[in-house]
Image (cartoon, rainbow, N blue to C red; front, side):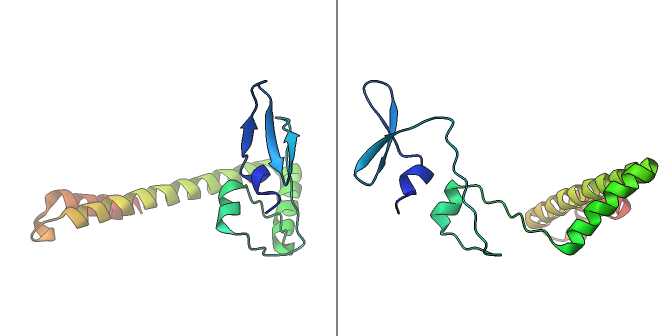
Length: 136
């Protein structure tokens, strides 16, 4: 409750042009360079929805497998840059494929929702289905 004005950025603008925050009974001058970082040792902390809406929550949890993958990639990048480039290209292709798949799913669902009568007679819908099948 004490930090709520800071988190919500509830500024009070004075006639002199300065911005203040009210903390308890005191008014504190606000510095635009001020940043607040909070840290917890909890592995999966729960914050109220109003706090999560106002803040950026970053999970810095590192797993052994994730760290191993990062270190392995760095070694491969040093020893075999060609393999590192190939891996990066494959990851990009995979991500592009996921985006394309999501777009096709959305398009097909939209066309199915808007279809009237026998869907097998809807030429536009059938051609979209064939295009999706050919793509993947």
